[in-house]
Image (cartoon, rainbow, N blue to C red; front, top):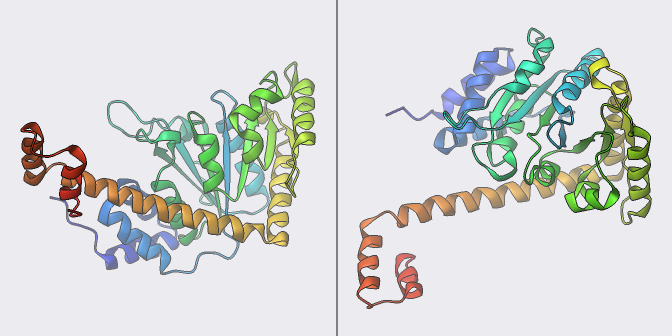
Length: 320
């Protein structure tokens, strides 16, 4: 049996990570992904240090094939040119054989592999709807505590991830391509509600102007927002327009800080994370209850007609 990580060990690892030891940071992230008591020890260690005052999280999402990884790679280039230190969390599909991340995003971001100012980590979705789950906010908190002011989260872009990423990031960038679809399809996807910045990537292809017009028309009809998401055309393979994207992200951050909406968003994020943690613990407790002798005994009583299922559940939960 693997020994549980002691709190002092977690603190020591975090201190090493803050001093630039990438292997220590990688191990801490592995413990966060694994969950359980080790993840709790890491969370306590991360909470014991003051995160950077300029800590900020950007989510990059969109349909598969939109070029998110190439765009992220190019955005990192712009951020590093501005002197920023950052980390990238690439949420990959899980391998059906090992449960681990497929690591495609890390391959596409190999330009920054030797840059000490950039830390890149692939995280497996592990079957979680949308690909985020409890590990992602814990990983973001850890990375900020380890001295990475900027964290980019690039999602796998399937299922409900477009909506989930909005709850995990300060600024959400939604990436689309020319010919991506009309405003009705966009509204169905929920992208209008979550996007803080729209990017039309591969904007050198036919249909880019029509896509931009569709998005602008859709935004003209939106109400109740005090921020109008800019629409930024890019060609990430050539780095065209990516500096404009970096400027748009900075503009949105200034807007959030000026209006006070940044703290409102973060408060909602903390509440959501707490709810998820409680739900996960209750689910684990339910699995324990449903695997013991008492459960089997109640099953036998159900089979003999001595109990109805609701009464059996009351007894199992101690409510009888």
